[in-house]
Amino acid sequence: LPQLVVLDLDATLWEPELYQLRNLPGYKDASGPGPVADKDVAMFDGAVNALAEVATAERWAKTQLAVASRTNKGPWAESLLKQFRVAGLSLDDLFVHKEIYSSSKTRHFQALREKTGIEYEDMLFFDDAKGGKWGNCEPVAKMGAMSAHCPDGLTSEVWRNALEEFSAAKT
Image (cartoon, rainbow, N blue to C red; front, top):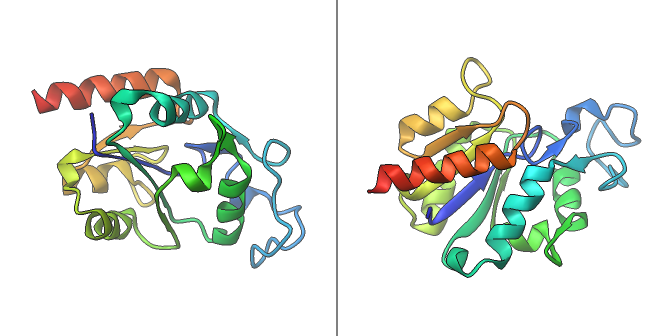
């Protein structure tokens, strides 16, 4: 199993993407009160199931969870992480490491490696953006972390396939 599982937020963990919530008060500077979990923003079922597995199954005891998001709506993202709960825990508690700021995913991963001491090849990353100008999976994969593309958000199928691929790469 990976030592660190890293998830993007917008369109991977939840929908809609925070920049799409233009109708909410405080949109411009992501000030309060912000979006409400399960009302304005919903988690993907596959993400809920994956996080519940990591939070409760003994085999995951040594795996850490992290967020890597380059949203410019950081205060909203952090508020939602406190609101959403999985397996009785807030996502804020589940995700031990949080890199939430406008920057590149490669910078997020450099910071995660510095903070955790975990090598890239022991990380598994889930993101909806594969390549191109705003792509994240390809640049992170070039660093050595296994990247799983989630074009429809994190699904149970993408989760299982990524874990199988990660395991196969380690044997």
